[in-house]
Picture 1 (spheres, rainbow, N blue to C red):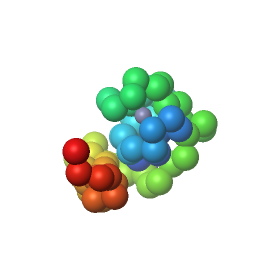
Picture 2: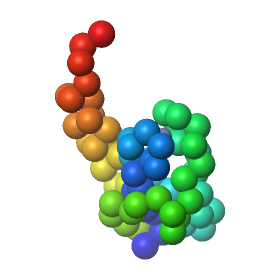
Picture 3: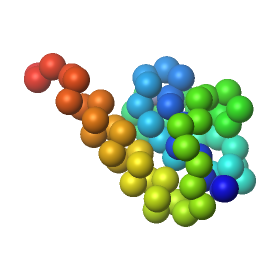
Length: 68
Ligand SMILES: [Zn+2]
């Protein structure tokens, strides 16, 4: 399956990586996550499904943050 949801090594948030490219810069902290280095949570055939999981996982993390 082409799209992998990975956990950012630096900030711990989630992002979708296209395995044909093999890496992606984290939109939150700027760290470049590489497949084979960052932990893969799940793989998907479609980018839509991958980004949906990213959205759900990142929304879950928000709950644990103190209110500003
Ligand atoms: Zn990050």
